[in-house]
Length: 340
Image (cartoon, rainbow, N blue to C red):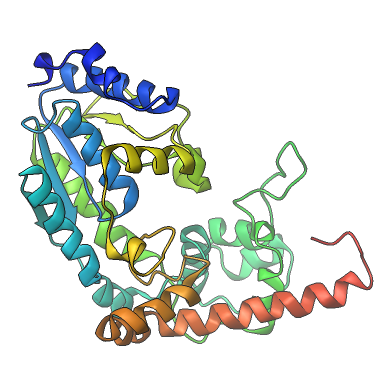
């Protein structure tokens, strides 16, 4: 039990790294203060460290370790889950998605570029939008039931304090509006696979138990919407479990030091394939998707065929967009040298 672990003993065994020592102290406190802990493991490097940290701080008998299967997973990830079970003597519950990713894509559409971009394009497509370059008031008359999508399209949200386009505007992704006007998608775009394969299963499982602490591997250094949504590593909930992010303040260097000190072994996706970061397997949101496609073809050819079948339209469209942006920048540099 966590009460049997003394803070001094835990820190004496820790590396001489203040961030890691602080994380150990905070994790020990959270384990002591909670009775039923949910630890979601993904097979990725951050979740490997998170699981080790919770167990090291005495949370093994308080924790439920869960893997949310998206329906499109690497064999390397499945082997990593077995490794965690063997190493720590735990059982990782494998829970199915509400809808697996292949079914979501067939039924709702394929993700493109980012969750927010996919959601906005999806809203526009559902209303038969023609990707027209017209003012907001004109478009609202044509598509009166699509206000949020049209506000995004027309850059109707105020700029940030730094003068940069709001992340809620299409201008946040340079060149995207011009690209969509010239190359309207001839396939359905949607981010519903995130909703049905990950978000809803987590929500459903949390509601089914009486967990008082939910641990996630979010790190501030990751950047992006997920990390920027939080200011601290811990959020006390008014209802439901408290939210805890044990690695919130870890840098990549801190992760490397933790791995070396405690002998953490990660998935073959890292140690054999050479990937630096993993998310949903094959997801088009990853800007290094070309590298992931090549690695999957080399190490898991069956999965490679599956990912091309599921996400192929998005990969092709993203390539076309990136080439469009490249040409757009070359053209505008001669006119506006400061263009970014």
